[in-house]
Structures are given as structure tokens and as C-alpha cells.
Amino acid sequence: MKFRTSTLDEEVEAIFSVIQYSPNNWSPEKIKKTFKINIDLNLINLIKETTLDKIKSKLKEIFSKKYEEEQSKINIRDISKKWNEKKIEILSKLKNIIEHKIEEEEITCVLLCLVNNGLYKVDEKQIEVFYDSKDFLFLMTHELFHILYWQVWKELFNETKIKNKKSWLLSEIIDYLVLDNNEIKNLWQNKQQPFFEKEIIWPKIFNAWKIRENFDSFLIEAKKIID
Ligand SMILES: [Zn+2]
Image 1: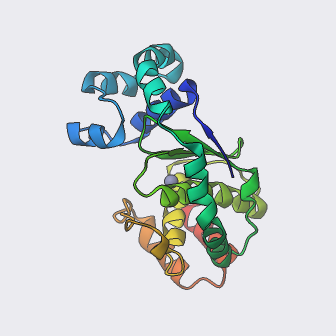
Image 2: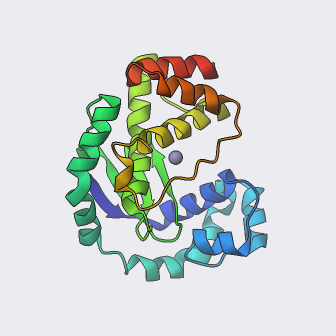
Image 3: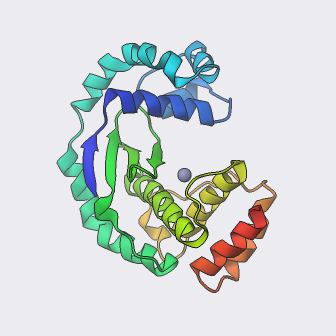
């Protein structure tokens, strides 16, 4: 894993996508928990209604000062040490569960400083993770797993991207199931809070997971459920 700090562009893109894709229930508490800077509701509503192109320069203007301040607090060496101390254990456990080789050396971890969240970019082999997350290793592994997932998905089905809401949801459910596995879950600080328990596909996927022969056969079943 290569670590680097974010650019201001990446930071505002992350803020934009967190606001765009999360449900519309921003409370002052949630804003405080999610961002290093207070974002008022008017701006959130504005972001919801526009495109990144239209608002990017404005966001850069608003966040540039705080970005500089927070950037200076990041200690890349400490953070990479945190990962390196645990990575052999994390990766070997993941490998036992999914039975696929994990090439984490090729992946870059961008440290976000303004938004307490994580995201991933498959084509760039890049994950982006809030540097000061309380459960940093979990968040990193969650995003890393998304990349592995799409690699395996491509090998099996020759598809590389999220096609629709269902395929997005499936990727989140499987990420949850893998990281909630008994073999690995004791490494995380917090218990994961699944957000999809009311979704129709959840019990079906969970059942296929429980009776799986191996990870690939499970993915084949899971794909049948969403197709
Ligand atoms: Zn995710």
C-alpha cells in the first residue's frame, strides 16, 4: 500500500460524493460527525441539486483554508506504520475467506482530511480514507475489499462496474459479510451497523452466504439473485 495525502480537488470531490449519495437526513450532529468543517444546510442542499463541475471551484474556495490546516496535521509515517503492523494478519484472513490473491502493493491509499468517510476508485486502484477515523484499519479494509471484490467480479463475469442500485447494494452487503466474518471481525474497534437489513435481497444473499461452498460459488449465486 502506498500512502499519500489528498489534493484539494480530491477532497472536494469526496465531500461532494458523500453529500450526493447519502440519504437526505443531514442534522447538525451528522454534519459534525462527518466533516472537519461546519457545512451549513444551505450548502448541502445546493450540492444535492447540482453537478460537481458546476460547484467545484466554489467548494475549493470554501474549503481551501481548512484543507491547508488539516493537511499539516497528517503524519503519513504513523499511519502507514499502523497499517503495516497489521496488514499481514488482515490480508491473510481476507485471503482465507475469499480464496483470492490480494495485491495490495499496487493500491494507493489517499488520506482524506476533511471528510470522515471512505471511498474507492477501481480503475485508479485507489482508496480514499479519512486519516483520523476512529476505526481506521476497518475503514481501510472496507474500501480495499471493494477493489478486490470488483477484481474477482471481473474475473468471473467480465463486468467491472456498478450497474445499478442493486449491484451497488450487493457490493456493500458482501463487504459487510466478509468483514463481519468470525475469523476477522475481532480486528475492528466497532461492530458494523448494517444499513440494508430491510432490503429484499438481504435475507436471500445472507442465506446464500451461509450455505456457500466457496467465495466464487457464492458470488455466482448472489449475481443470480440480483439479475
Ligand atoms: Zn462501502
